[in-house]
Image (cartoon, rainbow, N blue to C red; front, top):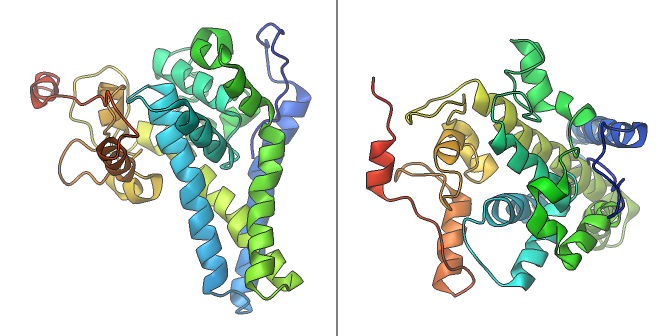
Amino acid sequence: MTTTEPRTLTERPPTGMNRTERNANLAGVVVPFLGVIGAMVLLWNSMVNWTQIAIMVVMYMVSAVGVTLGFHRLLTHRAFQSYPWVEYTLAVLGSLSLQGSVMDWVADHRKHHAHTDKEGDPHSPHVGHGTGFSGFWHAHAGWLLETQGQADWRKYAPDLYEDPKMRRIGKLFPLIAIVSLLIPTVAGFVLSGFTWKGALEGYIWGGLVRVFFGHHVTWSVNSICHIFGQRRFDIEDKSTNVWWLAPFSLGESWHHNHHAFPRSAFHGMKWWEFDITGLMIRGMSKVGLAWNVVRIAPERQQAKLRVE
């Protein structure tokens, strides 16, 4: 639940986060957390059923795929090509995650790769905020109150900036955010037999809890995957692979692999590195929805291995 769309298309890049942006992002951190507390109360009183869990899982998968497949591998890194309608659809689905507009997300992430773990990185745990917990917190959520959404679209996302339809999707982010919470609420209302209790449970589980979970999984890639985990490639940044986060992040936590080969469509590079998003790209390529898929040859991987 991060960032309203504060900029017009003719404004110069902002020099810092304004109060509206900061307050919106603060609400995006706090409100889903309050939803989790509400969900714990419902659980304690056995006021939850498999219908609400199903709504949460479906909403999580739809929005997470929008982020990992759409925002990240397709739009940020162009790890494969697809039809414009696929790009726009995934941009909308990614926006349902409430992680900011597609324009902000892509620009921020490209800036992260341009300055990884150095000055200018929007969310490094190793630069500008000390070490230990303070650095971890900045990379995990603190950056949302300082640097999120501040990367210049024209510099870091010119391809999206020059696409009127993509800019339109970015501008509609506040409306998409409302729809993201409305869908599970309506689903809970209908599937419970048109009860307001079902609507409330749908809002809490499919809305707030799902957003909370999605946020913290993504933020964990920024924080945990730059502090803890394994490394095997000879690269300068401090990115790591974190195996236990892979199922929840749909393969994004093979983050060290990704930083070693940013354009690779597949972050899991060993047979045992579970990468749901990579599997989806393989499936899309088989049915003609993805082409020019970027694959990293074993020889290139071997050449970049660390020498112990």
